[in-house]
Image (cartoon, rainbow, N blue to C red; front, side, top):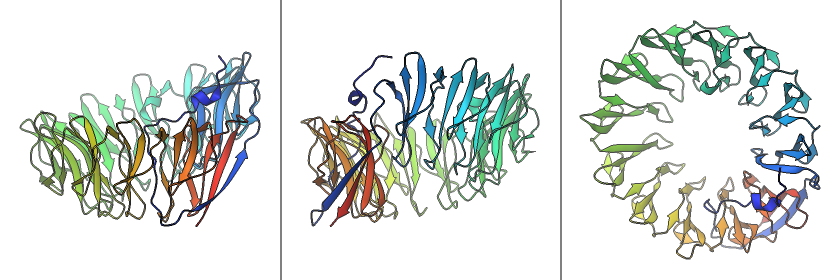
Length: 498
C-alpha cells in the first residue's frame, strides 16, 4: 500500500453546509485540543476504511505493515492479522463498541470490544441492534450458512439472503429476523423460529413498536403479505409496504390483473394504473400515496385525489401533521410545489421540501435557468451558482443554507444575510437552545471552527471526514481534527462564554 501524506485524504468536501450566525455580542471561545497520541508512523493507513463514531469521539481504521494488517482504534493498535474484512471496522449506534472482521490463516473471526470469536470459513458484515446491546452476523461453516446472534450460532441453511437486510433487529432490539434459503425454497426466521417455506420471500419489515413483522411471500404465481405468520389475500403482485408511526396501520400496494391499488389494514382501495408506497403523517392520522390515472400522476391524500400532473416527486408532512407538501412537474422541465393543495411558482427544478420543527415555515431549493435559490414561505431568496438544502434551527426561528458565489467562494446565508466567504465550509451545528451556530471553514488551506461569526484560534489540516460538530450542551461543542504540526488526530473542543 503506497504511503501518502495523510492530510490529502481528510480535506472535506466544500459543497457542504456552514456559515456565520449573527450575534449581538461576540462570544469568548475557550479552546482545548486533546490528542489521541502519536500516529503509528511505521503503519500505512488505509484511508477509505476510516470510521468515526456517531459522537465524533472515536476513530478507527485499517493499517498495513509489510504483509500484515491491524485495526487502530483511537490510536490503540490491535494484534496483526492476515486480513481485515470489508467495510470494517465500525462503531455501534451508541459509539461505545467497535467491531471488525479478521482473517488468520484459513479462518475468519469477529473481533467485538477486543474479544475474538471462534473461526469461520467466511463472515458477513455484522450488525448491531438499535440499543447497541445485541449483535448479529452471517457465518459460513463448511458448505452451509448460519446467523450468529449474540455469539450463539443458529441452525444451518443453504444460504442466508444477506441482500434482503438479513439479519435485522427490531426497533426495540428484542427481536431479530432474517431470510434463509433451503434448496429452492425461502423462509423467514424470527428469533430462531422458522416460518413456512415459500418460493420467494422479501425482506422483513418491523413496525415501530416492534409488535408486528411483515413480508411478502410468493407461492406459485400468487403473492401474499405475511404478518406475524398470518397470510393475507392472494394477489398477482405486491409492492412496497409501510407501517404507520404508531404501528396501528399497515399499507401496501397490490395488483390484480392490470390494476393496482393500496391495501390499508386489509381493505382494498380504488383501482389505478399504478400506485406507489404509502407515506403516513407523523401522528399516523393521515396517509398519502402516488397513483397513475389516464397516463397522469396524481397524489391521493386522505383518500382524496389531487390534480393530475406529468410527474410527482418528494412528499413531506409537517411535524404537526396538519400540512402536506409535494413536488410536481408539468410541461417541459417545469417543477413546482403543491402546498396543502395549492400550486406554487414554477421553476426548472425544485428540491426536497423542508418544514420547520414548529410546522409554521416551509423552505425548499429551486433552479431558475442556470442559477439556484431558496424559497421560504413562498418568498424567493437571491440567486446563486449552487446551493445546499435549507436547514431550520431547533426553535424554527432561523433558516440557513450554503451558497456558491460567482467568485467561487462559499457563504452561509442565515435568515437571508450572507456570512463571510470562505474557500470551503462544513455542516453547521446549532446548540440545543438555538442561541449558537457553529461550523467549520477552510481558509488558506487550513480548517477552523467559527462560532456565532467569530473565528476560533485553532487551525487544522482537516476536520476528519465523517466527524460532525456536536454540541454537548448549550455552550460546549467538539469535533475531531488532524493537527497540522504533529500530524496527530485529536478531539477539539470549545466552550462558549458570552
